Length: 295
Image (cartoon, rainbow, N blue to C red; front, side, top):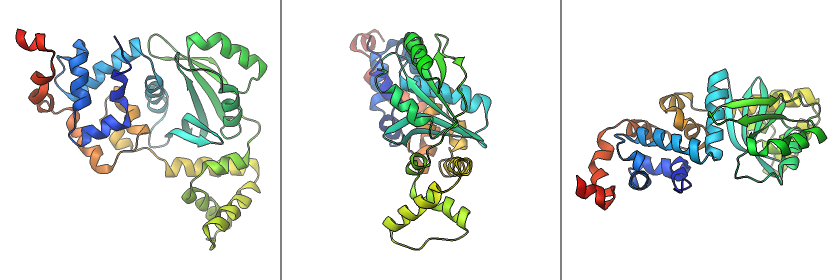
C-alpha cells in the first residue's frame, strides 16, 4: 500500500482546507485505507493515519512531529521555548530550531533522504546556533558516524522503531559564530529591534540604507552579544501559539507549530477535530462500493 498519499493529510494545504470545510482529502484517505473506515472524527483519522506513517512511512513530518512532542513539549514549556521550522540560514533551510535559552538546530534526514548536502548544511548551522544535531533513520548511521569522525561539529540522534529519539552523540557547543549568517536569517522587524535595543534609538533612512546600517551595527557586536540578541528576537517574534498547539492531539502538534494558519482557521480546525457529525454525513459516499453494498 502506498502511504505517501496518506502523508498529504499532514500538509499545510490539507489542514487549511479542513478549516474551509473542504474534507476531500480526509474522505479520500478513509476510502483508500481500510483501517480508517471506523473513525468517527477527524482527530481519529489523523491519529490513526499518523500511526500508519510512523510504522510504514516515517517521513520528515513524523520526525519533526516527534521532535515537537519529545523535546519541545517533553523537555521544555512552550511558554519559554519556541520551535522554528524551515528557517532560512545562509543558502540552506534548517528543518527545525528550538530556542530555550540556547539555540539548537535539528537537521532531519529520513530513510528517503540523501546526505549529499549535509556537510555544507551542518557547517552553516554550526555558525548560527549553539548546538546542531542531525536526526536520522538508523540506515544512515554508519555514514553519519564517518562524517562525524572527520568533522565533529554536530550531535547525532536516531529515530527509533519505537517512534522515539535516541541520542548517540551529544552536540558540542559551537565555538565560532558568523554574525553575517545570523543577520541574514533575521526579518526586518527583528534586526531593527536589535539595533533599537543596542543603540537606544530608531534609524531613519531608506530600506536599503536601513538594512546596511543595521547589518554594520550587528556585525560589529561581540560574538556572544550578537548570539544573545539573535536568539532573543527569534524567540520573541516567532513564538508558537501554545494555546492552539495545546488543543491539538500529539499526531498534529507539528501542524500547529510549522504551518501558517490564520487565527480564524485555528478556531475552526480545533472545533472540527472532535465534531462527531463532520464525517457521518459523507462517510457512506466515500467507502468502497463493495463495502457500501455489504451495509
